[in-house]
Image 1 (tube, rainbow, N blue to C red):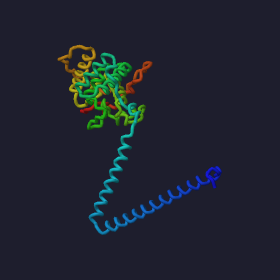
Image 2 (cartoon, one colour):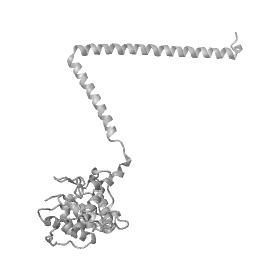
Image 3 (cartoon, rainbow, N blue to C red):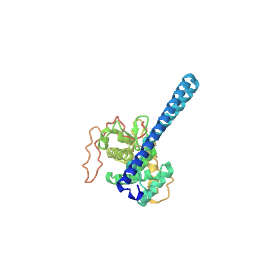
Length: 298
């Protein structure tokens, strides 16, 4: 038959047959290679098992290598879990840029940072809060900062032997009720919560005593002494911080505190009504036998 007389149908049938033959040969070759490879792997595995069974030293070495590999994999997975990204972590940080604060507050934040070797950013947040809360409580913010400096040196996790905790070293077990607004007594280790509770306690002490010096004596819980050692330290630091805030030369001489007899009230003192917009208000006198706050107790 002449090639020119081959019909298109016959050409298509031949192409399909050639394609089927090629696919069949490819499949058969792949099967043969895979089958032989699996057989070879099985043989090698059997030889390895027999060898390890006969040689205890080789078996122990193989076990150590396998264990080491598994431990490395476990550590790698643990690192991925521990160091997972958490972009919202910044929301838990108590910090503020001192350069963004008013000049007086910035001066105080930088000075305290240098003196107490604490980062300026967390101190910036505490200074700003002390100024804000001091205005509401009618307390000098530099006095609040002085109490923090003497009590804890700005360590929010400080704890005294008698259980005073946090920045302001408030006796948490005595003032647990004051932490209820902040979620519970563990808020004593939150810088802002401890600062606010400490200011409430200090404000109450000053109202009860009728003076800043007397309030400091009650705050530290001085019973067997007049508390002058504590009062002198706080007032001296208060004047230094005040001078820094105002940009004045540091005072070289700080008058010592006078002896202040403090007599516990025989009747409960009714606190004055809160002024509009005032968040802090004394809650009446604490028990005379219990110290109000402070790091060191007499």
